[in-house]
Image (cartoon, rainbow, N blue to C red; front, top):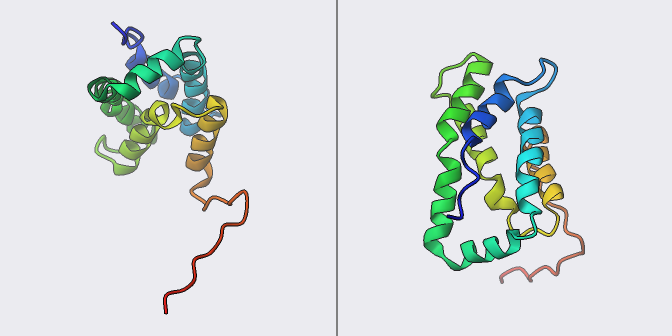
Length: 143
């Protein structure tokens, strides 16, 4: 079976929130957890082969996504408990979902660490329009 690394994922995710140092934010704790848990998977020598298998098999790709995102409720509840709000708090649910999408969003990126850091920077600092690396040609205005 190709999905054998899921055993303790939910417990580790919730522990990242619940057992973090008091001085560490939830987002920073989840960043640390993602770097510690996701980077070893993404940099494993067999990861490119597994990733190609997922990309070429829509059923496996969907299954992998469901396997990962099924922890959204537990992670969202841990975040809500930490914030002292209801488990149906939209911001807590959105944060949990976003964090759980990180493997899918970073898959195929040449630098997994940089991709994870960029996603957590988005959470920490908010969205800012990307800056083009080189000027793009503008289309003429319709007449």
